[in-house]
Structures are given as structure tokens and as C-alpha cells.
Image (tube, rainbow, N blue to C red; front, side, top):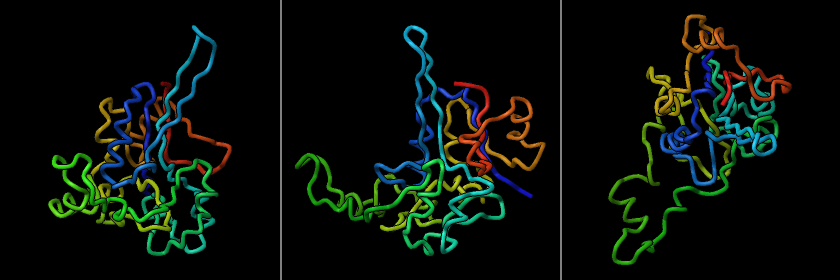
Length: 228
């Protein structure tokens, strides 16, 4: 059985944030919301200080708490092991947000397209207004990606939750998640964790792997190898 997942090599990661920027661009993630984020931890006493940077995303857990508590099955597992969200069935109860041990689910509190309906230019007589930009480009928000709508609403409605889908719209076309494609250090390896011959599985055999909050018992599909 296919079980897609991600292996993140912290030894290669440089903490540049390219994954976060790419995620926002690919998935039209609004300001203040993050499908791809990070944890920064510092320990020790100067001059013996350790800095650690850990990229984070939805862990697409095998035993996902968000799926277990969703009253409408809006949050569900697909045939490839990804944890996905059916926005049309979401009632905005936030049960999934409260259940997720990783704070990977966000709530859409505003109507995104309207947030860009400003009639005033940033620089009068110099820059265009948001409405002018919408009319000329034919997109509802800056950096809008129409490919996102292949499997999920391109712009999420107010009152619904949202999270990383591991770029399921790209995966179905044989591509890797955009965060993995743009990583300049090639620190992210996407693949079938159920296939012992996949690059992701081989890395786990070679280096072992750790997950965030193993005590939660959710069996994440995002693994970390080596150290930052």
C-alpha cells in the first residue's frame, strides 16, 4: 500500500525559508497563515550555544487525530496515505485544530478575495490598485496559482480550516511537493514510505529517523534525519 511521506535532512537544511515561500506561492496561503513553517530552538550558555532550525508542515499522520475527531469526515485519509480536507464538507467547528498535536491546521477567518479589494494605490499616480491588478491579471489575489484548484479550492472560503496537502495536485501528476522541488540544499525527499526501494525509505534505513512528538502516537509521515 502506498504511503507518501517526507524525509527532511536537517544536516542539509540551511534554514533559508524557501520551503515556506514556495508553499505560500503554490497554494495561495494567506498572510499570517502557514502550511509550511518552522521551529527555532536555542540552548546552552554563550559561547557554547546551540541553534536548531526544524522545518515543519502537516505530518500526514497514519493515525491522524484531526481525522478521528472531524464530525463530517471533511478531514480524511486518501488512498496514498495523505491527510486531506474536503472544504465543501467543513462546518468550521475547529475540532481538528484542537486535536492536532502539531498545530498544523489553520482557520480561515476572513474572505481572502475581499482583503485585496482596496481602491487606493500604495503610491498615488505610481502604483496600481488591488482592483486594477485583479482586472489586468484575471486572478483574485497576488501570486494566485490556478493549478491549486485541480484538487482543492484555489482560495479557501471564510469559516473553513486548511492545511498542507503535501501538494496533492502536483503528486497526482507525478511531481513532488513544491517545497521539495525548490529546496536549494535538496534537504527534502518525498516518496513512498511503503516502498523499501524509494529514496525516502533508503534514507531512513541509512540514517534512522525521528518524528515530532512521538509520544502523541499519531505515527507521522514526516521524518527528520541527522541534525541542523
